[in-house]
Amino acid sequence: MLDKRALRKKLIAERDGIAKQRKARLEKSILDSLFNHEAYQKAISIMTYIGFGSEIDTWQIIEQAWANGKIVYVPKIVKTTERSTMIAVKINERDDLAAGTWGILEPINSEPADASEIDLIIVPGLAFNAQGYRIGYGGGYYDQFLPHVRGRTIALCFDRFLREDIPVESWDIPVEIIITEKRVLPTKR
Ligand SMILES: Nc1ncnc2c1ncn2[C@@H]1O[C@H](COP(=O)(O)OP(=O)(O)OP(=O)(O)O)[C@@H](O)[C@H]1O
Ligand SMILES: [Mg+2]
Image (cartoon, rainbow, N blue to C red):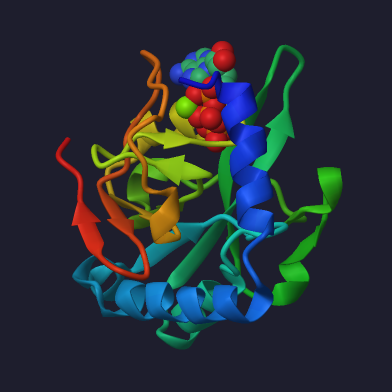
């Protein structure tokens, strides 16, 4: 099994290689399944990361959620003296965001929401296994955030990134549902 760092590099390169038009087609079917899922439809509030690089374009989720009258939160990394953590911040419009570290859009405001009150969290990841375990970018931010969550968790993933060789460590927290262009997979937790 590749170590996590080598696997991350390989997966990013593989995802970067998906042709733009094909990616848009896959995204559309993933997002259609998300919007049809009861976890989305019932959610009063949702949190989503903001897609970066070749990640799924989650901006479409934010706009749809606003159009559906939902409350939208996005992550922000905040640094305290000893470490950085991720908080969820409510956004009401596009202008509530500005480019932060690494050029990733993040909320300007730093008022943390109560993670336990968010109904649905869209969890990012490079690849997932059928149990919902994920390989992220290595910050460990979601593994620290998810224990505070009481809502549903969904990962959006191109089907080819569903694979069994995901290294799992003691602190890793799996997601509950994985949506690919081919299936909606409830993982057992
Ligand atoms: N609950 C935790 N408390 C403290 N540190 C943690 C916790 N979870 C993860 N970490 C730290 O974060 C580092 C990265 O975590 P991990 O390798 O699981 O990344 P990842 O899940 O791929 O990334 P991310 O969650 O940012 O997408 C770990 O090496 C670990 O030291
Ligand atoms: Mg992890």
